[in-house]
Image (cartoon, rainbow, N blue to C red; front, side, top):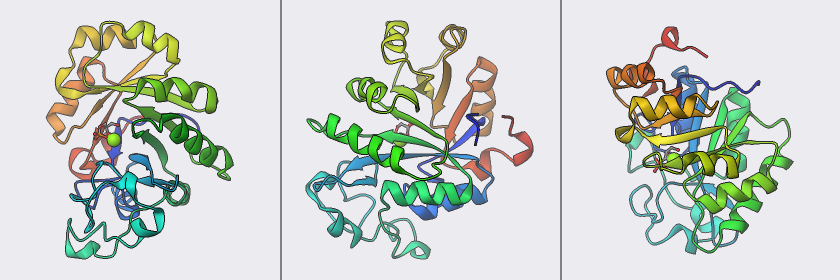
Length: 246
Ligand code: G3P
Ligand code: MG
């Protein structure tokens, strides 16, 4: 798949319709016509990579405590679907390898958001890089993180893969950060965006992507401001395949 971001990217798969960051959620995003998905990746206690958003297991599984304190085997015993709905009972926490396999099967691009646990940033980046580099016929990938150190290290450990920095608000020093990290895009929380800033960033060739937009009118407003793509939990609601432009 050539590197080309669509207007809409399924957030945590299609988190509005299936339990976030699960294979069911990735399948749902594809069923709804999404050509790219975003998901969050974290390191387990025994250095495996799994899809998971929170630090704690409590909200989205039947487990409790910190994900980073658990081995993959124990995490795999958890139910990551029932909290969302009985149709998803038995859904498990996927590994990054499983998610990439599903994306490859469904012909989806992947935005792999790295959530490094404190003090394990390098280990996380190295594990992500190893997984992606060794993955046969890998889907098209964009890696991103809120963590500056993580994005900076990606430049060395995964130089061939496009990178993005995620921010709540475009910082005053965005230009020097982008230059240092050599990012292809900046992913920004939607409520903080203004047209002048968006156009300034876009004029340098760096794409601005906004998260998380679940309202069609708001998405249209952001596109009018110059935003390239939006992350959405509800791809089926926010666009029909007709409205998608690549
Ligand atoms: O990658 C965009 C967005 O997912 C960042 O925030 O907390 O939903 O992972 P969060
Ligand atoms: Mg995310």
